Length: 89
Image (cartoon, rainbow, N blue to C red; front, top):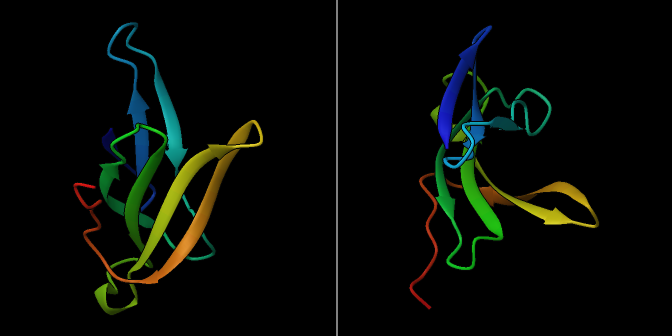
């Protein structure tokens, strides 16, 4: 996953290391949330946790989970926080 910077945004891209294809995963995962960072894959490879914030307003950073559900990507809000991680279990 690589950060993307365009028009003041910081998004998340997924890089397929086998064929070199890049897929945009999150650009603006919520209204006004322009910066995505600290991506963390779940141990089973089915979910990505990340933090998102409006511009450079760190106190308003929120945690999001991105997962494939019902044939498309879904992004759900987990509340305030940053630098997410999964427990070893």
